[in-house]
Image (cartoon, rainbow, N blue to C red; front, top):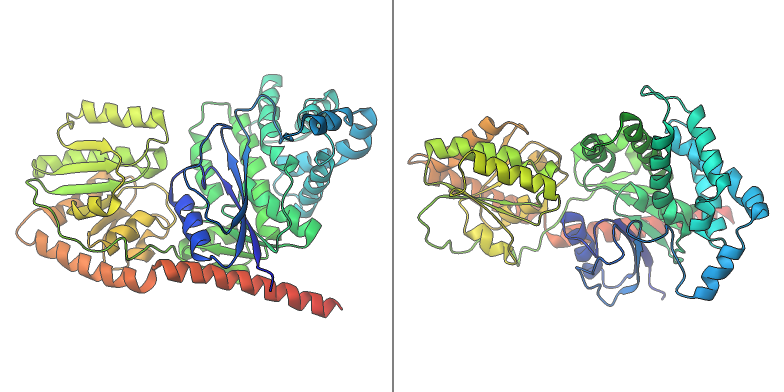
Length: 494
């Protein structure tokens, strides 16, 4: 019997970057060893090395750098093929095969409220065109630029029309984003997108052209987090609006064409419905953690009560709020210390945090770093603290629960659902509330008893609901549900 084949599509995660989504991809592929996987990974640099080594069940691993190359678009390894593609780009090809679908696609991207079928049709025809014609030469043609300018001038927005400089910036972005259309995708039974942005486009196109089933998985809510990150960009409101509209149109198209969507928790499901997901087509599959690796252990002797945070250093993790809370804790409990372990994903934000530590005189209380031994880090802590502004279902919270480390976290995403009554949850971006929760578990004669009770309840809950096996089997079930639906449709059609 032929193996089920699945194309996993990622964006800025597996196999070249760390983080929760990357670990989820790696675990899923390794656990489902009876399935033939292909990986298509969007990256931000052509020189980014593999952080994860794909296992034998990964038949192909295609890295697609959208940024950092001399020209946008996927190039063939054969110079002769690239040369032939460039030769095919002429006035007739642009007029007869490119301009109409490009107009349909740009109209759909500029106006997220339009029918997603029109956007998908335009993208599919562009994808077919770019299989034969050079992407970079086409997208920098005078015809493409003139049409883009005209469509931008026709589009209205509360911020007004783009200036010429702004339109140039937006066209450069578009040239990079749409480069995903120049890629050849393997033929598979199912395309499984790991987020609802650009990584979902191959799923839509494969569904329309090959009849593949399309599964869309959201961990964080891509569009919601994009609003937060783009809001911090140093660019004009009109350029921000362009990015918002482009990504919202893609997200809504992905949800419209997805045969099934999966989410981590009820909180995120509400957002998926808001962005066009059909409630009956959304399944909840929580994250799972390896309970053989993360388990209670003997805590080493320490002189100072320790609060641990395991998180990448970037704005959505709320590290600034943790630092402010640490200052409040220090005033009540001078011997407390804070360990913040995670890679620096945003250098400017890290400098902001480091400057705040210096300003508050916390150098002897806060330690930044990384670790290759996460289980030991949980054992060395009295409390695990996650101060995030936005989350889905963070692995670190489940890891802490399984490790016997009591949790204090902000009420974002599915954190409260995961913890239930086995941890302390406070409002996000409220350093005072965070400090009070930490002091409740650190200060006073009963603090150790409180920590032990929470840790014991959390361990039972995590083992019952958030195992690695439960997560992987949940996706196996989704895969075979999709295939059964496909077979049933074929039988009905005959």
